[in-house]
Length: 380
Image (cartoon, rainbow, N blue to C red; front, side, top):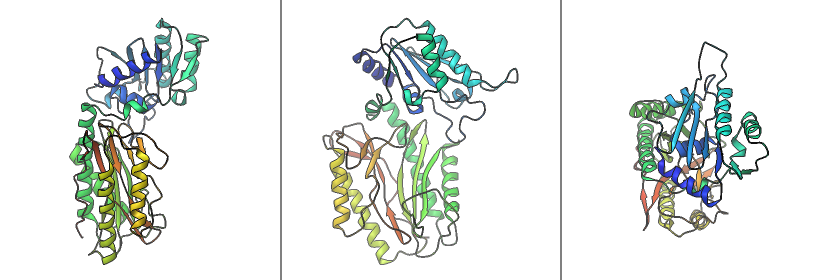
């Protein structure tokens, strides 16, 4: 799994003259190995904290707990990857999985014969891990490598795209469940429960799921977790979903209505759908992210609606939000192989909210739309 990602990382480190590196950010570990964190439940008492990837002269060592290994069926050693899983749960001695991870790291460091700088994702290593590095390697010069893999992660491999497509299919299932469930008298949490159940039933397992389920009468109706706010005729319900599959996220947003739409609801919904189509038409190789953002905001403004205060879009992959961010400051150039979300919307606090979001795979001559759920809602 993830051989291409490791080859790209090896080439990057060679170019920088780095023979040894320590990757500790959960997104880096997933991207390099396929190991998927237990996001829904967290590592728990026996998880041992974040996993690590140690790189030494072209070979990668994944250090994790047996619980983390069990959460990712199919992961294992490869020609350029060794996996060491320490015991997480035992009755034979106190629970000390974090220390066991550090012990394996220390052993790998002692066996290392490399010289020169050591690249480390400094922001993600623990104090004990950093102490192990310093103790084993002495006065080696450590260079921060915290965002080195981010540019590489923007372009997806075929293996990654297969996982992302499945995640988007789960997203579509969630939207269908939401549209079938929304009706006056239910609460936000009732809609979310139906969505979550449908996705997990389709996946056949526990599925990490974000993001928003909000009734338009909230004072802050741009987004947020579902609560007990009741749905009334005349409301809109905004459902923004992000299920994960095999360590890769999807994202999308649809709007549902508990009753026949008013003329203004109909006009607003169709305008935002047109805004999304316009934004999609801007995406092609060679375009700057900031230009997509600027032109999409101008489309909303020129239509006479309040302009959304959030990003126009973002990349997606092992993290729910990745580069390229479609925001006013970003000069990143769009390239084939990127997966981008676009999500224009308009909001009046306590009154109305409408956001529509589609996922796109950038191709050599445009885009492939990954979101299949209809934008036009069923009416409860």
